[in-house]
Image (cartoon, rainbow, N blue to C red; front, side):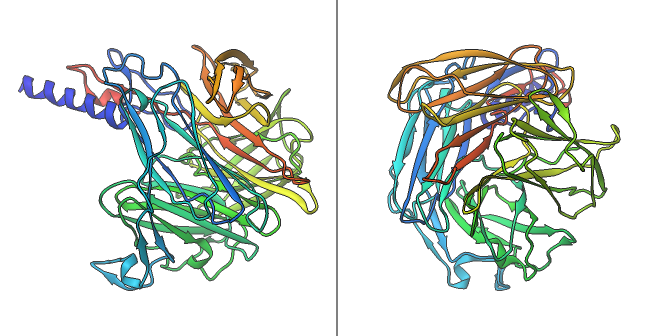
Length: 520
């Protein structure tokens, strides 16, 4: 019996290191490391990049990166990291009622699963510390599915950046390719006539995934069964136009994506008739307090969209972490969220020319109602406006990375939302993709403030580079986001990527340790 228990614990440790599933903190919290447990690098990571654009005037750059030394302490062989083109289900909407075995089948309704044109790896990575880039101007480029293992698994990140020069989808679209999961929240989607929002569902596995999509507007569920039982075939992406899921247009809504079978990656591509297009990444898991970092100092319009998805209403204190401290936006001291109903608030030019991060906390410190939130941010005026999205994000616990930075156009935002808890952060600029020597600088962010920095650049930079953010021991909580700005004529094109912890390491038990100690 003793030998059996020891084997079980050893198997659990191996599984945690391979899959990255072990003791992870709740959003906003700090992971627990019980006495005797060890924090080890993960041995396998998966990423999914959705189809970048259907525009004939678009160009997409993929940048893959793994931080130097991320696998230190791992007992693994040399790693590999690559993405492969995925198939596409054409004309994929939601289930239309034709079902077999209780679920709709994409091929049963005349839809066609198109295999990838080729299986050539995209941005294959062979070493840590140096980014690899690939560019395509192909209209209708496929989604990408892939994995990294061994020494290249911890911290593997791929940035997808698309420039569309004209047309309805014009603008700068940026996305840190998401990891597969079973549930995603997207506050800030729209089914209104002036928006075309597609959620891209990508299946990385060899078995089908079955997905439900639910939209919630200002009065609750937008109704209908059109989003139920969507089958996503293996190694395939399914695009779904959100306006086809309801007959009740909603300017501000929240999308909940739930994989009932299998797992998927999900991201929303939003196109506004006047404000261009960008990716809306999934928000952090709902939590009582949320932080939305990186509002540009020259934002001309900021809209908050929030939802309390549980069974209880949420009453929140609304604050903006500025370079000098926490302030309350004029006319919005508190925000009441009715359970299951999406609330939108126009914050206008809330930053007033200064960097800012929005902080939402319960008015009652003991309240536990979870909240999901995102911001739609606009820069520019008149016909020269561009939009981007900032979802609530997790804190940087150990390390976070932003790839695809150039000699100019990048801004790094660091927010320390808790007053009295300063954050001390090490920021490393990697070697350039075509040459350059890494550079590291340390920054202190006073508790209750946001610090916008022109990030460090490698010495002798050639090509693009990555930024790695690491809190120092004893640092207060810190949240991070990176803005890319690449003007298109008179349009201040930009995109913002939140930088959550990369979860490149997990806590695993030692032999003989009680596994219950590893749960939060």
